[in-house]
Image 1 (tube, one colour):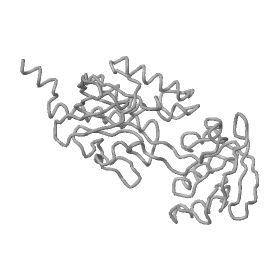
Image 2: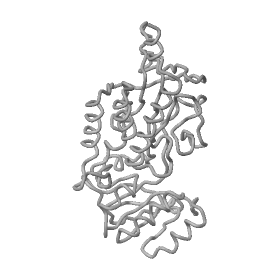
Image 3: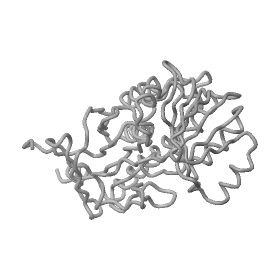
Length: 325
């Protein structure tokens, strides 16, 4: 551990749309934010080939380019962006207290406010062909990418409400949707099951798993296996949507911040406050419902404004020290 401990007014953990938007607003409020990118600089959007639903891009934009632009905008206003991973935290319970954060296991930082925007990671099946074709037809977000498969044949993997919702959403856009359910029943609510069963161009295959995603550069088909009979079959598709859940990136906050049963941070309704004063959460790390770049950016803005107001109320340590001399 280094001997010198750095003091920061506003520390942002995570570099997706929520983190960079928080940085833009915090910089403009003269909070002198420092942002640590985490293991995946730019967040999930860096694995997305086309972003077509973010306002201000009439011709669309690829995810990595968009995140580079957001970073440059944050830096333009004075954000210091650092490559590094926060590995431990110790949040104060006191109003106006100082929060301790460790980066890369060896650098300790003290922060007056912390904005957590570490996001959530989509769960995948773990197949080599699936990972190879991510961005080439394999997606974990129908709302994000479904438009690109209009009037085409696609498949959805999953059995819960999210999978059912994505399948019915895609059915409105696509020629056909094949839904693969691993067990002999769906976990989705009865209402969602009724919606699936009443959708004409949606076929559900039970006891069915993905054996291989077919295609070299883009998805061309799917080889499936019936886990009861071991019989294999193939279908032609151009898109595979994996809807088996997300895992919020909150492991290091366990025991300190309130979370729901799946690990999403709990924030005050209409705010970004966590249960620790001066600690705020924005983006997918606290949003298990929408999970869109635009909603993440919106909560990033909220978190920066909440942090600014919090410091104005409790008084920044820097301001107090200045007033003493």
